Length: 385
Image (cartoon, rainbow, N blue to C red; front, side):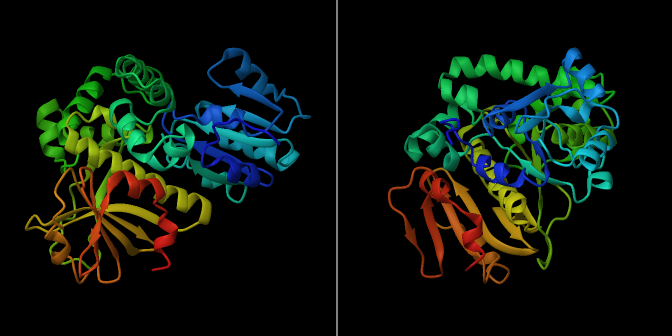
């Protein structure tokens, strides 16, 4: 059976799982969800809740029952959508297969599990990273890295390869998120304030974020700032990682770090490099969780004295791999020694962009080229260590 020549990493598993379960596919706007869904099967019927004609047919449940799949786009914007979907599944089963796509976190809006428990599998589609980009674009890891750093991993600007095109695309992309998605799902009207909030986050990428500082910058209370940041996370504009504190003495417990799914919004090279790695690690963690059912989380490590390791991937409450990111410094970070006892049975990797030669230290710290490492990184393989 022939499908699109640009298969995504999730394509095959969704085809298989859709035989028995409703598939909920969420992710950032324009990350390729609809395109992926349209290429899963030879025959399908498609409905977008934004279109008035489609909404009318959805409420009447008028669609072709003789196709392989029916695709519901942005269905979470329908009032009581989960009950509506449950009724279809309980009365008609999963024939044709049901694929639901959306640019908001299904698990946050409407509390999906309350009524769809046992009837669905959830998947997250991220923008392209180096690993998927190598297969998707058929170029070397270094070329994919360079393209990601200037055009982001969203398929349209990535394939176009033009920084000018990216800048025009980025403006419309943000405009749709703020002026369409937000106003569809929230009562927030201070769109200009949300744009300012995103601008204030730009220089803070790779650093801890103080809610109090953002509150002063925006001249609103901290509760409002936290609420707006939560909304931006729910709409896949940003994501946060928190410090991991279990069994780590004197660790910070509060301040998160924020990153953009659109890495090019991060202005400086060093933070943009860290943002690229953060996106790749989050994607790998969520893929392992979606496909294999493991509980996975992404954190950073930091003591009150300021010793820090950029990332630590946790699987089933155990640290699996700790990663430090550097642009050119190949000297292993002293922070690895600070966290030595905590990371005793954990892989330790320092990723370097401008690296002349890869090596491993006597105490097991791997110094690796960032492009090559991320092009083959598989979190599941580290569970065997």
